[in-house]
Image (cartoon, rainbow, N blue to C red):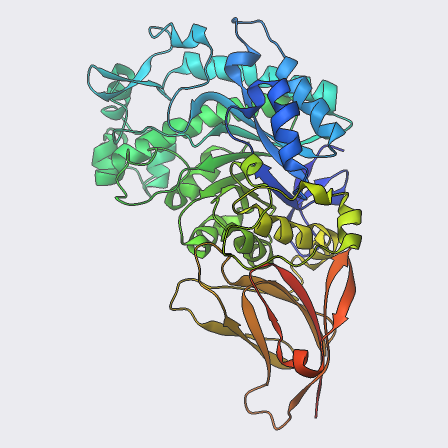
Length: 525
């Protein structure tokens, strides 16, 4: 069975691999890591072994796949597949084709050396950029052919093992440096008539007058015209490329987004990419893409996730910020949005060790480490890794449990939105739970997590940086008594307590910067 995305019994989009729900605990590699199998073998895989990832997000480069037009070399792809299988990791491949981060970086030399056939987008008339225009059908067709060859090869070499579970088409597409393309082809199209599908998008499709059908883009869309023009043409190009690949091997596919941000002028971010306000148009014009995925480096994690989980779009975060807050954000992504997956960027840099003057990490539970097959001697480097390692350890042992909870209403998530946000009260069926956010240091995770109902008189608390108090429902004449409080971990989806917290520790119902799990049992009297 090909990996696929389908609604579960509660209607929640879920990724299935070998017919079983699969939650992606991922990490994306730096752009150039996969260009050398030796570098991957000696530098990357050893760095990843300390982190309980189940998925590695790795690029495939058009320039190495088709160095000569019509001649394909799968050496790097096959090496990556073999290494991932040996490491027991799934792969999401990034197709670095015509466009990467708003530019043409990874196209083969025969594309770059022929600007006549594969013409560039222009910043202004006669002022070419180094980015191939989305209106260049020759480039789109060449990319589509190469991508279809890649997908056919994956079907032949990986159709049974399903090492590759998803493919991203291009990377952060759009045009940087100008609000639209001013090449000759773009000028003619922009000043020509608006396609019927875009008149329909403008609300004029069924009642278009003769004036409408002869109107230019600016006549119809005003100030939004340049960006919608570019969005339309990037959508057509991506649909052509993605559909060619899916015709060979229909793995789930996504397109990632460089987010619209200050100063919010098209061209300051890649103009024409899948920004949130035009997701509806992307979904209409690019049916071969299963999801639009935000790369989240902005501080408003909740706002971005809200936007990219709208319109039935499955949330998958292929690039998350690299500071410690990523180790708390991951809990909110799964708990609030039923995310398909989460993945910090530059994962090979995040080897676990605590930064100087930071809180000491608790000794890892040997049973958990044994279940994860993690070598304790590998805890050795700097940065975010120690926090992410703990968060992924917690989550990796409860993915099956979390999969069963998707859409049940038994999962209640929370996150600290800013420094003024002091906490929240989450209602459970019998009581309310007061969460007070703790810690607000840039070198530590933020406050985030989720509660999981455990019968009518119990729950689990999972996440980072919060204190818990049990409250009777407002207006209730009953009181709440804590019957039992345990700390522990999930192992193979079953909670395994390590300590019963009573006496002095009974008053310390809290989790610090290192992610943790608490189990509460209470009664009403």
